[in-house]
Figure 1 (cartoon, rainbow, N blue to C red):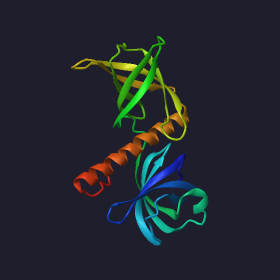
Figure 2: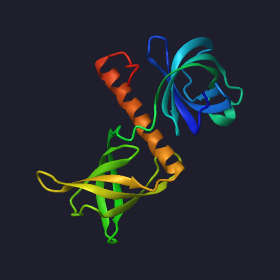
Figure 3: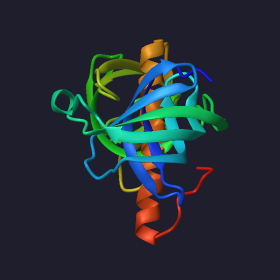
Figure 4: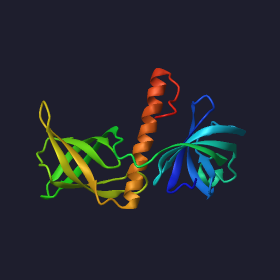
Length: 216
């Protein structure tokens, strides 16, 4: 399988405990090179599960042969360990799941199509849209824009309000659909959503001392 727009991944030990996040460099089809910022690794050869955050395929879970070794360019990159990684088997590809939402708490400034500036808090987000709350009144069908750095570069995103909810205790909630995303914007938002999914799963595992769920 050839990855596309894949820049990061999460590896696991054989007992499903998290290994580390890594930067991904594609060498050829089915062969990748991973770079780790954590110093807490050792030279080893292992067969393990890796979740790749791919901008076009989504989250791709693979069985991989991996050879961990010291990175000779560590002084320049700040990544003391690297791994040669060969994809053995693709287990699952969570492709373009626009209905998958993750809970967040992100304070943002929005500009409405009537030129008002709206301060609100994004409470959940998916690759297809977001839900935010604010004290200010908007109406169904209005357009909003905002700027946010989902990955490495800030993006200006436009969304349309599809649902208006009046909240108990005051304020309003708005369900919005993203409009005319560029491939780069969609890839970065999708990556952001999947990374938050994994982070949430690992946090739950840590709190409850549970094994990592292989099915998300």
